[in-house]
Length: 227
Image (tube, rainbow, N blue to C red; front, side, top):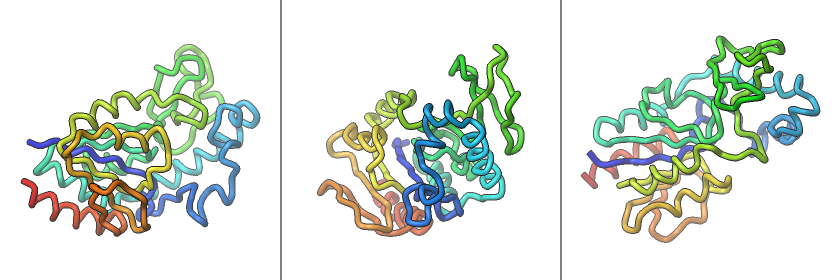
């Protein structure tokens, strides 16, 4: 079975109602990203950071996967599908995708502030002050903040190098290091990009100018012709 590697970004979940930072009505309109998504912000005002992610988590519990998520999960019928996502939500998993690598962390998890290997599932939507790891330190959101390393990027690179087909959906390839993953695709491997807005891409990329839901349906039609 051929290996299909998908890089998904914020546009993937936007159809489910998940607000992005970068859109005109996005979260950057309400928050300074460095105040809520950086180690400095956490040190300066942990209450604001905790409240911000609790709000995001509460919203996620009220959100459902969209046809794009389900469409990628259904591709497991004909491909060995590996999702690499920049998103911190769990909508890929809830739609049925069995192999999902989160580059930027997971909203539904918390981790120790003294040992980053200690990661815990959050029960419900609220992470509180006083919630501590087994070493006694306060738990923080399990999110890769600006200025922090992306631990999963090397694993993602290896996945992309093994891809027989590479798909980018819901990201304009402006966020690094994730955007650099396209450089690890082997020569001759088909590349598809799904985005409703014009995107500057290499000449050998097939662009599907649609939102995720409709775009993934079109993608499947094109992929079935490659089998």
